[in-house]
Length: 293
Length: 266
Image (cartoon, rainbow over all chains, first blue to last red):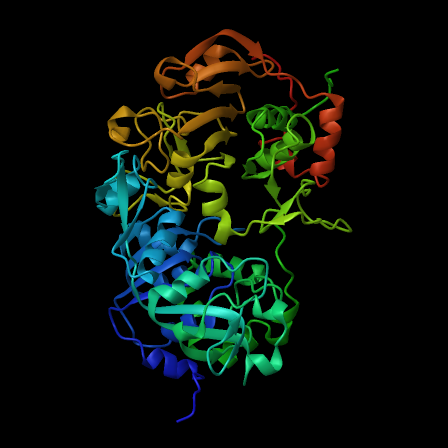
Protein backbone atom coordinates (compact mmCIF):
# COMPACT_ATOMS: atom_id res chain seq x y z
CA UNK A 1 0.00 0.00 0.00
CA UNK A 2 1.36 3.41 -0.86
CA UNK A 3 1.18 6.21 1.62
CA UNK A 4 -0.85 8.73 -0.32
CA UNK A 5 -3.67 10.95 0.95
CA UNK A 6 -4.40 12.61 -2.35
CA UNK A 7 -8.02 12.38 -3.42
CA UNK A 8 -10.51 14.10 -5.66
CA UNK A 9 -13.18 16.49 -4.45
CA UNK A 10 -15.72 13.78 -5.31
CA UNK A 11 -13.85 11.29 -3.07
CA UNK A 12 -13.90 13.85 -0.29
CA UNK A 13 -17.61 14.56 -0.46
CA UNK A 14 -18.31 10.84 -0.70
CA UNK A 15 -16.84 10.43 2.79
CA UNK A 16 -19.28 12.89 4.37
CA UNK A 17 -22.71 11.94 5.68
CA UNK A 18 -25.99 13.69 6.35
CA UNK A 19 -26.19 15.23 9.81
CA UNK A 20 -22.43 15.56 10.31
CA UNK A 21 -20.78 18.39 12.23
CA UNK A 22 -18.39 20.08 9.86
CA UNK A 23 -15.91 22.83 10.70
CA UNK A 24 -14.93 25.25 7.95
CA UNK A 25 -11.60 27.00 8.50
CA UNK A 26 -10.66 30.48 7.27
CA UNK A 27 -12.13 33.75 8.48
CA UNK A 28 -15.04 35.64 6.91
CA UNK A 29 -14.06 36.24 3.28
CA UNK A 30 -10.48 35.05 3.80
CA UNK A 31 -8.80 31.68 3.12
CA UNK A 32 -12.05 29.72 2.87
CA UNK A 33 -11.98 26.18 1.44
CA UNK A 34 -14.54 27.19 -1.16
CA UNK A 35 -13.80 24.43 -3.69
CA UNK A 36 -14.73 21.90 -0.97
CA UNK A 37 -17.79 23.93 0.02
CA UNK A 38 -18.89 23.99 -3.63
CA UNK A 39 -18.48 20.23 -3.78
CA UNK A 40 -20.89 19.95 -0.83
CA UNK A 41 -23.30 22.24 -2.71
CA UNK A 42 -23.19 19.82 -5.66
CA UNK A 43 -23.92 16.85 -3.42
CA UNK A 44 -27.19 15.63 -1.86
CA UNK A 45 -25.76 16.13 1.69
CA UNK A 46 -28.19 17.69 4.14
CA UNK A 47 -28.92 18.50 7.81
CA UNK A 48 -25.37 19.63 8.47
CA UNK A 49 -24.15 21.36 11.59
CA UNK A 50 -21.57 23.90 10.48
CA UNK A 51 -18.92 25.47 12.73
CA UNK A 52 -17.20 28.57 11.33
CA UNK A 53 -15.97 32.11 11.48
CA UNK A 54 -18.37 32.62 8.64
CA UNK A 55 -18.17 34.23 5.24
CA UNK A 56 -19.62 33.22 1.85
CA UNK A 57 -19.19 29.56 2.83
CA UNK A 58 -22.04 30.03 5.29
CA UNK A 59 -24.12 32.17 2.94
CA UNK A 60 -23.93 29.55 0.17
CA UNK A 61 -24.62 26.57 2.42
CA UNK A 62 -27.60 28.38 3.96
CA UNK A 63 -28.94 29.39 0.54
CA UNK A 64 -28.69 25.78 -0.63
CA UNK A 65 -30.60 24.52 2.40
CA UNK A 66 -27.71 22.38 3.63
CA UNK A 67 -27.55 23.81 7.14
CA UNK A 68 -29.60 22.52 10.06
CA UNK A 69 -27.57 24.32 12.69
CA UNK A 70 -24.88 26.97 12.56
CA UNK A 71 -22.29 27.40 15.32
CA UNK A 72 -20.67 30.76 14.68
CA UNK A 73 -18.82 33.76 16.05
CA UNK A 74 -19.85 36.02 13.19
CA UNK A 75 -20.74 35.90 9.52
CA UNK A 76 -19.47 38.70 7.29
CA UNK A 77 -17.93 39.52 3.92
CA UNK A 78 -15.83 42.36 5.47
CA UNK A 79 -16.30 44.95 2.71
CA UNK A 80 -19.97 43.95 2.63
CA UNK A 81 -20.44 43.72 6.38
CA UNK A 82 -23.75 41.84 6.50
CA UNK A 83 -23.74 38.46 4.73
CA UNK A 84 -26.89 38.62 2.60
CA UNK A 85 -27.70 34.90 2.34
CA UNK A 86 -27.02 34.24 6.00
CA UNK A 87 -29.36 37.14 6.79
CA UNK A 88 -32.08 35.59 4.67
CA UNK A 89 -31.73 32.28 6.45
CA UNK A 90 -31.82 33.85 9.90
CA UNK A 91 -34.60 36.32 9.17
CA UNK A 92 -36.81 33.52 7.83
CA UNK A 93 -36.07 31.37 10.89
CA UNK A 94 -34.72 28.62 8.62
CA UNK A 95 -31.72 27.57 10.74
CA UNK A 96 -30.89 26.76 14.35
CA UNK A 97 -27.96 28.69 15.73
CA UNK A 98 -25.46 28.54 18.53
CA UNK A 99 -23.94 31.99 18.61
CA UNK A 100 -20.51 32.32 20.21
CA UNK A 101 -17.96 34.95 20.97
CA UNK A 102 -15.06 34.52 18.52
CA UNK A 103 -12.75 33.52 21.35
CA UNK A 104 -15.24 30.97 22.68
CA UNK A 105 -15.27 29.30 19.27
CA UNK A 106 -11.50 28.99 19.41
CA UNK A 107 -11.77 27.69 22.98
CA UNK A 108 -14.28 25.03 21.93
CA UNK A 109 -11.98 23.83 19.15
CA UNK A 110 -8.99 23.79 21.51
CA UNK A 111 -10.94 21.79 24.10
CA UNK A 112 -11.82 19.27 21.39
CA UNK A 113 -8.23 19.14 20.17
CA UNK A 114 -6.97 18.52 23.71
CA UNK A 115 -9.68 15.92 24.29
CA UNK A 116 -11.13 17.87 27.21
CA UNK A 117 -14.87 18.19 27.87
CA UNK A 118 -14.65 21.98 28.24
CA UNK A 119 -12.36 24.90 28.88
CA UNK A 120 -13.20 27.60 31.43
CA UNK A 121 -13.53 31.22 30.47
CA UNK A 122 -15.08 34.49 31.61
CA UNK A 123 -16.09 35.20 28.05
CA UNK A 124 -19.83 35.12 27.42
CA UNK A 125 -20.81 35.72 31.04
CA UNK A 126 -23.13 38.68 31.52
CA UNK A 127 -24.30 38.63 27.88
CA UNK A 128 -27.06 37.03 25.82
CA UNK A 129 -24.53 34.51 24.51
CA UNK A 130 -25.14 32.88 27.89
CA UNK A 131 -28.93 33.30 27.67
CA UNK A 132 -29.37 31.79 24.22
CA UNK A 133 -26.54 29.27 24.28
CA UNK A 134 -27.59 27.46 27.45
CA UNK A 135 -24.00 27.32 28.68
CA UNK A 136 -23.21 25.96 32.12
CA UNK A 137 -20.77 27.43 34.61
CA UNK A 138 -18.09 25.83 36.71
CA UNK A 139 -16.67 27.05 40.00
CA UNK A 140 -12.93 27.33 40.42
CA UNK A 141 -11.85 24.75 43.02
CA UNK A 142 -9.10 27.09 44.22
CA UNK A 143 -9.23 29.87 46.78
CA UNK A 144 -10.65 32.42 44.32
CA UNK A 145 -13.82 30.34 43.85
CA UNK A 146 -14.61 32.21 40.66
CA UNK A 147 -17.63 31.15 38.63
CA UNK A 148 -16.62 30.63 35.00
CA UNK A 149 -18.38 29.63 31.82
CA UNK A 150 -17.55 26.07 30.79
CA UNK A 151 -17.09 26.24 27.02
CA UNK A 152 -17.89 22.74 25.74
CA UNK A 153 -15.57 21.04 23.28
CA UNK A 154 -16.61 21.51 19.66
CA UNK A 155 -15.69 18.12 18.30
CA UNK A 156 -15.92 18.03 14.51
CA UNK A 157 -16.68 15.03 12.33
CA UNK A 158 -14.79 16.77 9.57
CA UNK A 159 -12.80 19.95 9.03
CA UNK A 160 -12.35 21.70 5.69
CA UNK A 161 -9.19 23.77 5.25
CA UNK A 162 -7.58 25.48 2.28
CA UNK A 163 -3.80 25.91 2.25
CA UNK A 164 -1.08 27.04 -0.14
CA UNK A 165 0.80 23.76 -0.49
CA UNK A 166 0.34 20.15 0.49
CA UNK A 167 2.07 16.87 -0.28
CA UNK A 168 0.79 13.34 -0.62
CA UNK A 169 1.57 12.55 3.03
CA UNK A 170 -0.56 15.44 4.23
CA UNK A 171 2.25 17.83 5.08
CA UNK A 172 1.04 21.35 4.48
CA UNK A 173 2.33 24.89 4.18
CA UNK A 174 0.04 27.87 4.73
CA UNK A 175 1.50 31.12 3.47
CA UNK A 176 0.05 34.60 3.92
CA UNK A 177 0.13 36.99 6.86
CA UNK A 178 -2.45 35.20 8.99
CA UNK A 179 -3.74 31.66 9.13
CA UNK A 180 -6.45 32.39 11.73
CA UNK A 181 -7.60 29.28 13.64
CA UNK A 182 -7.08 26.79 10.82
CA UNK A 183 -4.75 24.65 12.95
CA UNK A 184 -7.40 24.16 15.62
CA UNK A 185 -10.03 23.16 13.09
CA UNK A 186 -7.61 20.47 11.91
CA UNK A 187 -6.88 19.16 15.40
CA UNK A 188 -10.51 19.33 16.59
CA UNK A 189 -11.72 17.10 13.75
CA UNK A 190 -11.91 13.34 13.38
CA UNK A 191 -10.99 13.88 9.76
CA UNK A 192 -9.48 16.98 8.20
CA UNK A 193 -9.75 17.47 4.45
CA UNK A 194 -7.20 19.89 3.09
CA UNK A 195 -7.44 21.48 -0.32
CA UNK A 196 -4.34 23.16 -1.66
CA UNK A 197 -3.36 25.62 -4.35
CA UNK A 198 -0.44 23.33 -5.14
CA UNK A 199 -0.01 19.64 -4.37
CA UNK A 200 3.48 18.16 -4.58
CA UNK A 201 4.84 14.65 -4.13
CA UNK A 202 7.02 15.43 -1.15
CA UNK A 203 7.32 18.73 0.69
CA UNK A 204 10.88 17.92 1.79
CA UNK A 205 11.86 17.67 -1.86
CA UNK A 206 9.94 20.64 -3.23
CA UNK A 207 10.01 23.15 -0.35
CA UNK A 208 12.65 22.06 2.17
CA UNK A 209 13.68 25.50 3.51
CA UNK A 210 13.18 26.17 7.23
CA UNK A 211 11.27 29.37 6.44
CA UNK A 212 8.81 27.33 4.37
CA UNK A 213 8.60 24.59 6.98
CA UNK A 214 7.65 27.19 9.60
CA UNK A 215 4.46 27.83 7.64
CA UNK A 216 3.32 24.28 8.38
CA UNK A 217 0.62 25.21 10.88
CA UNK A 218 -0.60 21.70 11.68
CA UNK A 219 0.73 18.17 11.57
CA UNK A 220 -0.01 15.55 8.94
CA UNK A 221 -1.38 13.03 11.46
CA UNK A 222 -4.54 15.15 11.47
CA UNK A 223 -4.93 15.17 7.70
CA UNK A 224 -7.18 12.56 6.10
CA UNK A 225 -7.36 13.84 2.55
CA UNK A 226 -5.43 16.18 0.28
CA UNK A 227 -7.39 17.65 -2.60
CA UNK A 228 -5.68 19.68 -5.35
CA UNK A 229 -7.63 22.91 -5.84
CA UNK A 230 -5.92 25.79 -7.55
CA UNK A 231 -8.03 28.91 -6.91
CA UNK A 232 -9.84 26.79 -4.36
CA UNK A 233 -10.47 29.80 -2.09
CA UNK A 234 -12.27 31.85 -4.75
CA UNK A 235 -14.16 34.19 -4.16
CA UNK A 236 -12.36 34.59 -0.82
CA UNK A 237 -8.80 35.87 -0.46
CA UNK A 238 -5.77 33.58 -0.48
CA UNK A 239 -2.70 35.71 0.21
CA UNK A 240 -0.13 35.92 -1.15
CA UNK A 241 -1.59 34.23 -4.27
CA UNK A 242 -4.74 36.29 -4.86
CA UNK A 243 -7.20 38.63 -3.20
CA UNK A 244 -10.93 38.29 -2.80
CA UNK A 245 -13.21 38.84 -5.78
CA UNK A 246 -15.15 42.01 -5.00
CA UNK A 247 -17.01 41.80 -8.31
CA UNK A 248 -18.26 38.34 -7.44
CA UNK A 249 -19.24 39.43 -3.93
CA UNK A 250 -21.24 42.33 -5.31
CA UNK A 251 -23.25 40.20 -7.73
CA UNK A 252 -23.55 37.49 -5.06
CA UNK A 253 -24.98 40.03 -2.62
CA UNK A 254 -27.27 41.56 -5.24
CA UNK A 255 -28.60 38.11 -6.16
CA UNK A 256 -29.99 37.72 -2.63
CA UNK A 257 -32.52 40.43 -3.48
CA UNK A 258 -33.38 39.18 -6.96
CA UNK A 259 -36.05 36.78 -8.15
CA UNK A 260 -34.31 33.54 -9.08
CA UNK A 261 -31.01 34.91 -7.70
CA UNK A 262 -30.02 31.70 -6.00
CA UNK A 263 -30.79 29.58 -9.06
CA UNK A 264 -28.45 31.73 -11.13
CA UNK A 265 -25.63 31.59 -8.57
CA UNK A 266 -26.12 27.89 -8.08
CA UNK A 267 -26.13 27.14 -11.81
CA UNK A 268 -22.54 28.38 -12.09
CA UNK A 269 -21.52 26.15 -9.21
CA UNK A 270 -23.52 23.11 -10.32
CA UNK A 271 -21.73 23.19 -13.70
CA UNK A 272 -18.65 21.73 -12.00
CA UNK A 273 -15.50 23.24 -10.52
CA UNK A 274 -13.64 23.66 -13.78
CA UNK A 275 -16.58 25.38 -15.47
CA UNK A 276 -17.17 27.52 -12.39
CA UNK A 277 -13.59 28.78 -12.34
CA UNK A 278 -13.72 29.49 -16.04
CA UNK A 279 -16.99 31.36 -15.57
CA UNK A 280 -15.57 33.58 -12.78
CA UNK A 281 -12.40 34.57 -14.60
CA UNK A 282 -10.07 31.58 -14.91
CA UNK A 283 -6.44 32.71 -14.84
CA UNK A 284 -7.54 36.25 -14.02
CA UNK A 285 -8.15 35.08 -10.45
CA UNK A 286 -4.36 35.05 -10.03
CA UNK A 287 -4.29 38.82 -10.47
CA UNK A 288 -7.14 39.72 -8.09
CA UNK A 289 -5.51 42.36 -5.87
CA UNK A 290 -4.87 41.58 -2.22
CA UNK A 291 -7.25 43.51 0.03
CA UNK A 292 -5.96 46.53 1.93
CA UNK A 293 -7.14 46.79 5.51
CA UNK B 1 -3.99 77.20 18.82
CA UNK B 2 -7.32 75.81 17.70
CA UNK B 3 -8.12 75.88 14.03
CA UNK B 4 -11.30 77.68 13.00
CA UNK B 5 -11.98 75.74 9.84
CA UNK B 6 -12.57 72.05 10.51
CA UNK B 7 -15.26 69.46 9.96
CA UNK B 8 -17.36 67.68 12.55
CA UNK B 9 -15.57 64.46 11.57
CA UNK B 10 -12.24 66.06 12.46
CA UNK B 11 -13.60 67.32 15.78
CA UNK B 12 -14.79 63.78 16.53
CA UNK B 13 -11.41 62.27 15.64
CA UNK B 14 -9.74 64.53 18.19
CA UNK B 15 -12.42 63.73 20.79
CA UNK B 16 -12.04 59.98 20.13
CA UNK B 17 -8.26 60.13 20.38
CA UNK B 18 -8.61 61.33 23.98
CA UNK B 19 -9.96 57.90 24.90
CA UNK B 20 -6.46 56.43 24.66
CA UNK B 21 -4.64 59.19 26.53
CA UNK B 22 -2.24 57.75 29.07
CA UNK B 23 -3.16 54.12 28.35
CA UNK B 24 0.47 53.06 27.93
CA UNK B 25 1.49 49.85 26.17
CA UNK B 26 -1.85 48.47 25.03
CA UNK B 27 -3.07 47.67 21.55
CA UNK B 28 -5.19 50.60 20.39
CA UNK B 29 -7.87 49.23 18.07
CA UNK B 30 -10.10 51.73 16.31
CA UNK B 31 -12.77 50.01 14.24
CA UNK B 32 -14.00 52.21 11.39
CA UNK B 33 -12.36 55.27 9.85
CA UNK B 34 -12.83 57.80 12.66
CA UNK B 35 -11.76 55.58 15.57
CA UNK B 36 -8.84 54.29 13.51
CA UNK B 37 -7.56 57.77 12.60
CA UNK B 38 -8.13 58.74 16.24
CA UNK B 39 -5.98 55.87 17.50
CA UNK B 40 -3.20 56.93 15.14
CA UNK B 41 -3.54 60.52 16.29
CA UNK B 42 -3.32 59.42 19.93
CA UNK B 43 -0.10 57.50 19.23
CA UNK B 44 1.46 60.34 17.26
CA UNK B 45 0.61 63.00 19.85
CA UNK B 46 -0.09 62.31 23.51
CA UNK B 47 0.45 58.54 23.95
CA UNK B 48 3.39 57.23 21.89
CA UNK B 49 3.55 53.99 23.94
CA UNK B 50 0.37 52.69 22.25
CA UNK B 51 0.67 49.60 20.07
CA UNK B 52 -1.28 49.09 16.87
CA UNK B 53 -1.55 46.83 13.86
CA UNK B 54 -1.60 47.45 10.13
CA UNK B 55 -5.27 46.41 10.22
CA UNK B 56 -4.31 42.85 9.42
CA UNK B 57 -1.58 40.89 11.16
CA UNK B 58 1.51 43.02 11.77
CA UNK B 59 2.39 45.51 14.49
CA UNK B 60 3.53 48.93 13.33
CA UNK B 61 5.12 51.84 15.16
CA UNK B 62 3.94 54.29 12.52
CA UNK B 63 0.14 54.25 12.08
CA UNK B 64 -0.80 53.06 8.58
CA UNK B 65 -2.80 55.64 6.58
CA UNK B 66 -6.29 54.66 5.46
CA UNK B 67 -7.19 53.55 1.94
CA UNK B 68 -5.07 52.97 -1.15
CA UNK B 69 -1.41 53.31 -0.20
CA UNK B 70 0.29 54.44 -3.40
CA UNK B 71 4.00 54.32 -2.75
CA UNK B 72 3.58 54.08 1.00
CA UNK B 73 4.81 50.77 2.37
CA UNK B 74 4.05 49.94 6.00
CA UNK B 75 7.11 48.95 8.00
CA UNK B 76 6.51 46.09 10.37
CA UNK B 77 7.81 46.13 13.93
CA UNK B 78 6.12 42.98 15.16
CA UNK B 79 3.56 40.31 14.50
CA UNK B 80 0.09 40.01 16.01
CA UNK B 81 -2.11 37.83 13.81
CA UNK B 82 -5.70 37.02 14.85
CA UNK B 83 -4.42 33.63 15.90
CA UNK B 84 -2.48 35.32 18.71
CA UNK B 85 -4.84 38.18 19.35
CA UNK B 86 -7.07 36.67 22.01
CA UNK B 87 -4.19 35.39 24.13
CA UNK B 88 -1.89 38.37 23.66
CA UNK B 89 -4.24 41.34 23.55
CA UNK B 90 -7.82 40.50 24.53
CA UNK B 91 -7.72 38.07 27.45
CA UNK B 92 -4.51 39.61 28.78
CA UNK B 93 -6.23 42.99 28.97
CA UNK B 94 -3.54 44.61 26.83
CA UNK B 95 -6.01 46.38 24.57
CA UNK B 96 -8.36 49.32 24.33
CA UNK B 97 -10.86 49.03 21.49
CA UNK B 98 -13.20 51.68 20.16
CA UNK B 99 -16.17 50.21 18.34
CA UNK B 100 -19.48 51.27 16.79
CA UNK B 101 -22.33 49.06 17.99
CA UNK B 102 -25.82 49.30 16.51
CA UNK B 103 -27.52 49.73 19.90
CA UNK B 104 -26.37 50.92 23.32
CA UNK B 105 -28.38 50.97 26.54
CA UNK B 106 -28.19 52.80 29.88
CA UNK B 107 -25.92 50.09 31.31
CA UNK B 108 -23.39 50.43 28.52
CA UNK B 109 -24.48 47.07 27.09
CA UNK B 110 -24.23 47.01 23.31
CA UNK B 111 -25.62 45.01 20.41
CA UNK B 112 -24.10 44.15 17.03
CA UNK B 113 -25.70 40.73 16.70
CA UNK B 114 -29.32 41.05 15.61
CA UNK B 115 -32.43 43.19 16.03
CA UNK B 116 -35.97 42.33 17.02
CA UNK B 117 -37.77 40.60 19.88
CA UNK B 118 -37.49 37.02 18.55
CA UNK B 119 -33.94 35.68 18.65
CA UNK B 120 -34.91 32.57 16.67
CA UNK B 121 -36.10 34.72 13.80
CA UNK B 122 -34.59 38.18 14.06
CA UNK B 123 -36.02 41.16 12.24
CA UNK B 124 -32.52 42.10 11.12
CA UNK B 125 -29.61 39.71 11.37
CA UNK B 126 -26.36 41.61 11.68
CA UNK B 127 -22.83 40.33 12.29
CA UNK B 128 -23.26 38.15 15.33
CA UNK B 129 -21.68 39.05 18.65
CA UNK B 130 -18.13 38.83 17.20
CA UNK B 131 -15.57 39.38 19.97
CA UNK B 132 -17.75 41.75 21.99
CA UNK B 133 -18.46 39.43 24.94
CA UNK B 134 -14.76 38.74 25.46
CA UNK B 135 -13.62 42.29 24.78
CA UNK B 136 -16.02 43.79 27.27
CA UNK B 137 -15.12 41.50 30.14
CA UNK B 138 -11.36 41.59 29.46
CA UNK B 139 -10.14 45.05 28.51
CA UNK B 140 -10.93 48.75 28.16
CA UNK B 141 -13.61 49.68 25.63
CA UNK B 142 -14.92 52.92 24.19
CA UNK B 143 -17.58 53.68 21.61
CA UNK B 144 -18.01 55.92 18.62
CA UNK B 145 -21.64 56.45 17.64
CA UNK B 146 -21.96 58.83 14.68
CA UNK B 147 -25.77 58.98 14.77
CA UNK B 148 -26.89 59.94 18.26
CA UNK B 149 -30.57 58.97 18.32
CA UNK B 150 -33.08 56.94 20.30
CA UNK B 151 -32.68 54.12 17.79
CA UNK B 152 -29.10 53.76 18.94
CA UNK B 153 -29.44 54.89 22.58
CA UNK B 154 -32.38 52.60 23.29
CA UNK B 155 -34.89 52.99 26.06
CA UNK B 156 -34.81 49.46 27.51
CA UNK B 157 -32.04 46.88 27.17
CA UNK B 158 -30.46 46.34 23.77
CA UNK B 159 -32.12 43.53 21.79
CA UNK B 160 -29.21 41.09 22.02
CA UNK B 161 -26.73 41.89 24.78
CA UNK B 162 -23.44 41.36 22.95
CA UNK B 163 -21.16 43.08 25.43
CA UNK B 164 -21.16 43.24 29.20
CA UNK B 165 -22.21 46.49 30.82
CA UNK B 166 -22.80 47.81 34.32
CA UNK B 167 -26.04 45.88 34.75
CA UNK B 168 -26.21 44.26 38.18
CA UNK B 169 -29.03 41.96 37.08
CA UNK B 170 -26.71 40.32 34.53
CA UNK B 171 -23.35 40.50 36.29
CA UNK B 172 -24.34 38.96 39.62
CA UNK B 173 -21.62 36.44 40.52
CA UNK B 174 -19.52 37.43 37.49
CA UNK B 175 -15.98 38.68 37.95
CA UNK B 176 -16.17 42.16 36.44
CA UNK B 177 -12.78 43.35 37.73
CA UNK B 178 -11.66 44.04 34.16
CA UNK B 179 -14.89 45.57 32.87
CA UNK B 180 -13.85 49.13 32.03
CA UNK B 181 -16.07 51.22 29.76
CA UNK B 182 -14.48 54.59 29.13
CA UNK B 183 -15.67 57.05 26.54
CA UNK B 184 -18.66 57.47 24.24
CA UNK B 185 -18.20 59.94 21.41
CA UNK B 186 -21.25 60.80 19.28
CA UNK B 187 -22.02 63.43 16.67
CA UNK B 188 -23.49 65.55 19.49
CA UNK B 189 -21.42 65.05 22.63
CA UNK B 190 -18.77 63.22 24.58
CA UNK B 191 -19.90 61.04 27.48
CA UNK B 192 -18.30 58.76 30.02
CA UNK B 193 -19.57 56.32 32.63
CA UNK B 194 -18.94 58.65 35.54
CA UNK B 195 -22.54 59.06 36.73
CA UNK B 196 -24.03 57.31 39.77
CA UNK B 197 -23.48 53.51 39.51
CA UNK B 198 -21.57 54.04 36.24
CA UNK B 199 -24.48 55.87 34.63
CA UNK B 200 -23.68 57.44 31.27
CA UNK B 201 -22.76 61.07 31.84
CA UNK B 202 -22.37 64.00 29.46
CA UNK B 203 -18.93 65.58 29.84
CA UNK B 204 -18.72 67.84 26.80
CA UNK B 205 -21.01 69.16 24.08
CA UNK B 206 -19.86 69.78 20.54
CA UNK B 207 -19.93 73.42 19.41
CA UNK B 208 -23.53 74.56 18.84
CA UNK B 209 -25.15 71.56 20.57
CA UNK B 210 -27.31 71.93 23.70
CA UNK B 211 -27.74 69.50 26.56
CA UNK B 212 -31.48 69.31 25.78
CA UNK B 213 -30.74 68.14 22.25
CA UNK B 214 -28.53 65.37 23.57
CA UNK B 215 -31.08 64.23 26.15
CA UNK B 216 -33.84 64.42 23.52
CA UNK B 217 -31.87 62.06 21.25
CA UNK B 218 -31.29 59.54 24.06
CA UNK B 219 -33.73 56.83 25.16
CA UNK B 220 -32.83 57.06 28.85
CA UNK B 221 -31.95 59.80 31.35
CA UNK B 222 -28.36 60.99 31.13
CA UNK B 223 -26.23 62.09 34.04
CA UNK B 224 -24.46 65.41 33.58
CA UNK B 225 -20.96 66.36 34.71
CA UNK B 226 -20.65 69.24 37.19
CA UNK B 227 -19.01 71.30 34.54
CA UNK B 228 -20.00 70.52 30.95
CA UNK B 229 -17.36 71.86 28.60
CA UNK B 230 -17.40 72.49 24.88
CA UNK B 231 -15.61 69.70 23.00
CA UNK B 232 -12.23 71.17 22.02
CA UNK B 233 -11.62 72.09 18.40
CA UNK B 234 -8.69 70.41 16.64
CA UNK B 235 -5.39 72.25 16.62
CA UNK B 236 -3.54 72.95 13.38
CA UNK B 237 -1.01 70.25 14.36
CA UNK B 238 -3.78 67.70 14.93
CA UNK B 239 -5.41 68.57 11.60
CA UNK B 240 -2.11 68.08 9.80
CA UNK B 241 -1.71 64.62 11.33
CA UNK B 242 -5.32 63.73 10.52
CA UNK B 243 -4.74 64.66 6.86
CA UNK B 244 -1.61 62.52 6.81
CA UNK B 245 -3.39 59.52 8.32
CA UNK B 246 -6.37 59.90 5.98
CA UNK B 247 -4.96 61.20 2.68
CA UNK B 248 -8.07 60.21 0.69
CA UNK B 249 -10.44 62.07 3.05
CA UNK B 250 -12.38 58.92 3.88
CA UNK B 251 -13.45 60.73 7.08
CA UNK B 252 -15.60 63.08 4.95
CA UNK B 253 -17.99 60.23 4.21
CA UNK B 254 -18.67 59.21 7.81
CA UNK B 255 -21.19 61.89 8.83
CA UNK B 256 -23.97 62.64 6.36
CA UNK B 257 -23.23 65.85 4.45
CA UNK B 258 -19.79 66.17 6.09
CA UNK B 259 -20.91 69.15 8.22
CA UNK B 260 -18.63 71.84 9.62
CA UNK B 261 -17.31 71.39 13.12
CA UNK B 262 -19.05 74.48 14.44
CA UNK B 263 -22.78 74.16 13.93
CA UNK B 264 -25.25 76.98 13.59
CA UNK B 265 -27.56 76.93 16.57
CA UNK B 266 -31.04 75.80 15.55
